[in-house]
Image (cartoon, rainbow, N blue to C red; front, side, top):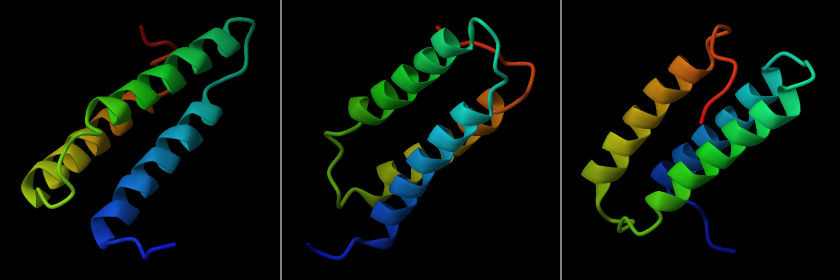
Length: 83
């Protein structure tokens, strides 16, 4: 398997952070549904930008910053579900 570049590692790290934050959401009767919604949203966001050229560093860095901001927003305890 080829070694990952620094940006590739950052993208994977952001995805793992998203999954960790999803698991931190409080457990209630509707938690499974909200966790599934968060997971589906995160997966869709990453898949939406799958076609970005791996050498387009500007776009990748922009998407990483945007993803970090969204993660901070959705990690807030007041956010319980996403649609």
